[in-house]
Length: 160
Image (cartoon, rainbow, N blue to C red; front, side, top):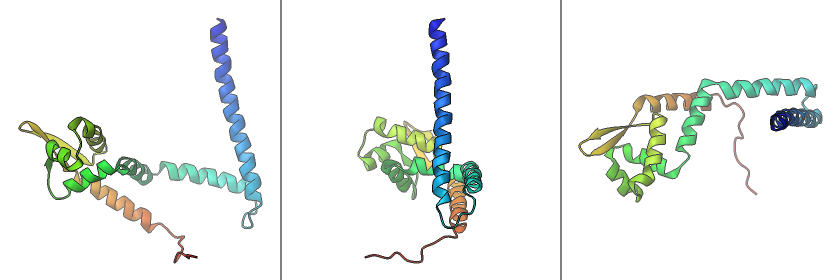
C-alpha cells in the first residue's frame, strides 16, 4: 500500500514537473520573442509557432524523409546502397565490400530492409539483395518537393 502510494505520488510529481518545465519554457521563449523587432504579439506568435511545429512534424513527406535519413545516416548502410546501384549482390559480396563479417552487417541489412530500401531473397545458399525502386522514387519525389518549397536563401556565403 505504501509502495503504491509512493509510486502514484512520484508519477504525479513527474507529470507536475513536466508541466512546470513546459510552462517555464514557454514563459522564457515568449519573453525572448517579445524582444524581437519583427514580432508584435509574442504570446500569439508563440502559439503560431507551436501549431507550425505540430504541422511540420506530422507531414507525411517529413516523416518519410526523417525515417529514410535516419537509416541512411550510417556509412556502412550508404556503402551497401552504393554497392547495389549497379547490380544485385549476395551477402558474401557485401561482406567483402564492407570488410566485415556477416553478423556485423546483418543489423544494417535489416534496417535497410525495414525501411524498404532493399529487399533480400534466398538464391542457392546465399541471400541476395537489391534496391526497392518504389521507395527510391518516393524518396526522390518527396526530397524534390521539400527542396522546391524552400524560399529563404542566402545567395552566397561570405567568408572572412
